[in-house]
Amino acid sequence: MVKIRTIELGDFPLLLAPMEDVSDPPFRALCKRHGADMMYTEFISSEGLIRDAVKSIQKMDIFEYERPIGVQIFGSDEESMVRAAQIIEQVKPDLIDINYGCPVKKVACKGAGAGLLQDIPKMVRLTKAVVNAVKVPVTVKTRLGWDDSTKNIVETAERLQDIGIEALTIHGRTRKQMYKGEADWTLIGAVKNNQRMQIPIFGNGDIDSPEKALLYKDTYGVDGIMIGRASIGYPWIFNEIKAYLADGSHLPPPTFKERVEAVEEHLNFSIQWKGEKVGIAEMKRHYGNYFKGIPHFKEYKSGLILANERQEVEHLLGEIKQQFLVS
Image (cartoon, rainbow, N blue to C red; front, side, top):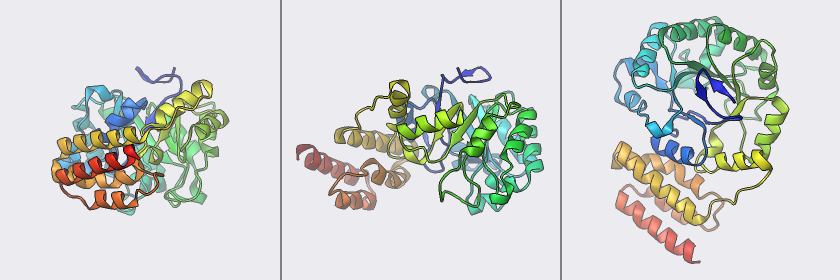
């Protein structure tokens, strides 16, 4: 049984990665139903949170059925990180996760996210301040290093464990790689197999099939796997991996009807949570993934992306059902 303090996650948990503009409550609801064992909010700016920025506050919305769930924060200022963590603790998440992995320029080049991979002593200092400021477990998500010459994750993991984090997720790329090339899990395995490490170690990067999940589980010995991009538009991946890990079986892929129903549910919750204008706009990034691999779908995908009103989208989905479920 993998545990983060008293949070029981099962024998080999599958975690939904915190993804900006993706891991919101509508998407998390689908992933939870389809087998995600633990989920995280989109990452929240500590500066935005302490300034009461509406978007940052909205990202803290969590629901009882989502538990266990972590709220993820990022920042580069110790005082802001501490205050933000204390604000987050008020919404009663199961844990707080600190993002030291986001590679995008507007975050990393301001010394937050993966930017702190250039200053490990500061990363350790910030983390210790947050750990000491809250009662809930604190965990970390990070990368192998800033670039190929600074892949110091084995030592960094020890230092973070020593100041009190209770789990660590490692993405198998450097910041310089962004999301390019293949994720290197060898150093993730080295952290897990370091006898000094006692906390759960989760691997992240490139897991996009049940077969790969089993291979990486067996090869690197991690305590669980975090899945990000492969779940976008395909929340079914969690239960597909679980079935394969359990007995080598393959669950049937979702039917076209199930895909459409998932889109409708996602859309309705998105509109309910964010309002019609924003809810519809933010759904546009998902349609292509939900209907990936469906032949002769290009025209409908373009229509969904261009549609800006609920009635328009619902009319198109009705047409899609009629066209593809009848044919």
